[in-house]
Image 1: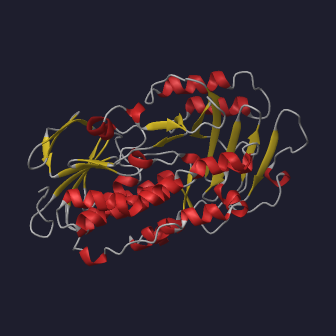
Image 2 (image 1 turned 45 degrees about the vertical axis):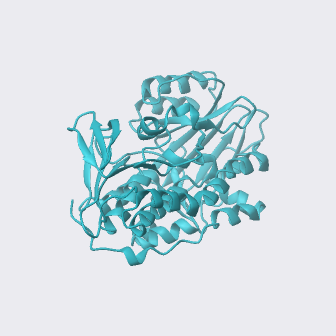
Image 3 (image 1 turned 180 degrees about the vertical axis):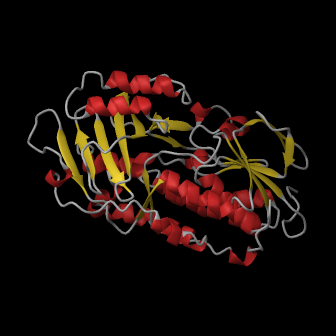
Length: 410
């Protein structure tokens, strides 16, 4: 019988690997249900940088249950204002080489910068969850009574079970399930051509006023936006490549890839953007990929968020699906009263259909009209396809509130 001590009778210990979104979210709920949670994060603190992300539909209900909706709305990007591209300082004359589009970001979703959401989740958990920053898992060894975990820096420890919430390149998934290549698959916009994105902070070169501007060419998409009353300005550059080989933690190598890709593009403000990229400390680069797995648990190890079911940034749903997954995983562990095998099975039964439907969204984006910058915007797609709204609203939250406990101190 695959059973662990009930959190109501003794302190069940859980290691969560990953401190971005899914990790702190599942830690929040586990702590609320009485588990003793330790979270290990490779970075030396909460993560900085990243794109503007959406919390929509059922995920808004999750953050409301967490009591965080008001704080999140206070930090929303608030990109509203100017009424034309001219007002944003952009030349919009016709060109055979590239086109511009742009506009306000103002819809029923809650849009927030990824690092702002991460900080809110950290502050909601830091008093009750033990954080191990600047470290990562190197070995997992399951025993009859738990999982022995080796870290890069901290001493070995034993936990009742481990949750991998450490993203697309999950170390926990590799240790417990096998090679990344078996599970991570690029979402190609053209046959054999992979879509990569570089995201980093830049000066507000265009003097944008609560606005976003997209520049589209045959081989690239450049998105610029400002947020938080114009105090934050970020760029997203799309790179199309075949069989690109790079180290996903080698930022210098990744920046060189982007610089080489745009070396011949001297128009518009591309030279300034590349110059800013070299200085950016919050630079991020990765493929637009999905994680697809037949199961999200193996023994006492389970996965959540991008580690388990990344739908890719092209879906516009990565954050929302991660928040829902964290809520359900923790809730099923509490509801199973320590029977982790049943909890993990119920977790999959609850949301696999929702997850797999959301993983179809990038292909809806691609097939809708990938020849325009607007086709990257899920809100624009929603106006064209009711299917989008059906999918993002496609899971009614289960109520786990009867398992709430007084939050435990780490």
